[in-house]
Length: 295
Image 1 (tube, rainbow, N blue to C red):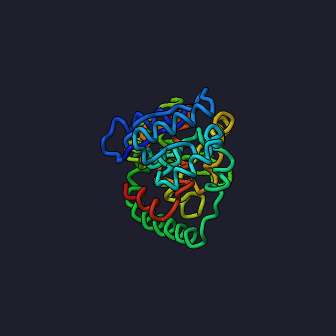
Image 2: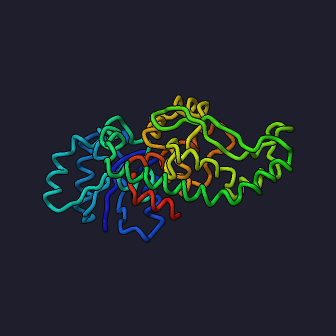
Image 3: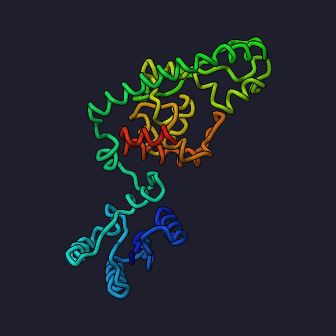
């Protein structure tokens, strides 16, 4: 499908490069018309010339962008002639499975993030969380004696460890884990701890958090108050991820395998992680939860 990309910035460049490098996409960007430093009249003439010259049938642009809003009368005429318009943010979501943070504004959150969940979805999700955590919790009790014995044999310290995390509506909560750090050497992972972390067994006690409603099985992973404060100060709309219940695993975890770890403030990678979290906030549903659980 012959397409015209209209807009400037990293989002447009990234999208252009991805679609041009992969023949699996049905779109072909015949031309990328950049709006930066372009006069409205020049942009209008160039766009109409390219559409006519290259028989463009699809135009991809930021439909909410100020740089193109004066061209709406021309866009309307083109719609009547059969030209299809696609918002660059929507296309970016479909291609990369995440939200382009650069296009976010308060209007986006009013339209998407703050939309109330249906009662049916909320009740069904809570029932599935409780049932799933109860069944998995009972099954996991089989390994508890072995894990407890290994931790005690390793250094004799306490079995469990609690972390303060930020949950839904920015409320602090305590989550439980099997201890994996040494009580004798600061910031050292024990031998048992390495095994527990490798197979995620250290997180089994968090099923209790799911049972009592602090966590969901599926949702954005909760962060510590210190990191939340740092990210909220440096990343616009960061706290929007707290609109939904945090989870044991989420969209970012199955999509982004290089997420920040170790409690270190990492703005760049967390921005990418947030773009996945906000995708979940926007599209949350039982079907998406099931997809994440299966993956």
